[in-house]
Amino acid sequence: MSVVKGWCPGAWQPMMSGDGLVVRVRPHLARLSRAQALGLAALAAAQGSGIVELTRRGNVQLRGIVDHGAVIAGLAELDLLDPDPDAEARRNVTVAPDWQPGDATQRLADALTRQLAELPPLPAKFGFVIDAGPVRVLDGVPGDVRIERGEAGLILRAEGQPFGRAVDEATAVDAALALAQWFAAHRGEARRMRAASPPGPWDAEVGPVGPVQGFTEGGVAFGQMPAETLAVAAQAAEGIRVTPWRTLLLEGATARPSGMLPPDNPLLKVDACPGAPLCPQASVETRSLARQAHPKGSLHVSGCAKGCARSAPADVTLVGRDGRFDLVIGGRAGDTPAATGLTPQEALDAL
Image: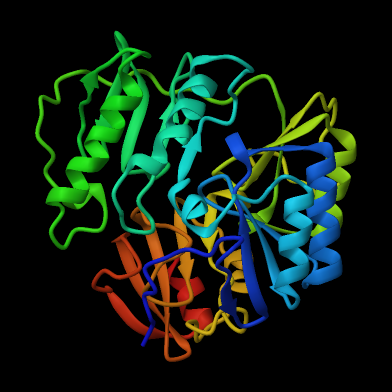
């Protein structure tokens, strides 16, 4: 049986996995300077397994860490460490990675970050999304309280609501904090906003969705790469933006570094967790199967029913159970399967 821990690793509070500690680093505005990226690559190689991961919230993970104290010291030197575990845990803010210095996304993110300490305790995975550029780019990226570009200006939207509430830059952060405070007071057993029913009005339309533009973009399959790949990317760029899509935006780079995939590579559309033996919850290998698959739609390969790699439904989800796979159609890893007990080859045939 899989164990739902209800929290994510951090720098101060790492999580034990099958290959050692997992340390998650939350760069401010999801941006790493060249020196920070090179420093993270060096820490991953010297203190861990040499594997660097990109998360769905624009964070970076170092795997296989043995000496946690050395990593904490290194992160502090790189200015990538929050002052304490509580401050780190509260800073679940995903921003549109194509922000420009001084624009609305940066101003709103900075203002929100300064006021997060005012919030009452919230579930560990509760988070904010700021997507205030000319068009929305974070459509489909999970978050509980969203400040987005609407049809007629900025809107505040609760996850799960198809419409938002009109705000402006002067009122957006206070409105977002008030919505989070409402959730803390009225959530009952709910751990995420989509399971609650926040009071309206919710009548402002969301704005159009568009692609990220203006950056050289490089992807890594399943969000996992050797530390050397991060170092090569850092040398090619003036700075790095970490996206929620398992890609890096490379500031000032003129070409995609070797070892990185173009953003339209089909492998970047497949979600697969580390699986066995890296995760003690998993009973199956996941990524070897995922590399062999050629799905017509979205595919999620999960080592267990927790579904850590993808919270949204997928066209097809393969879920590890007792060394075999269950098949879910149009759902999440924890949903009722259409078929059970498939071997890896039978799972591939089902695709």
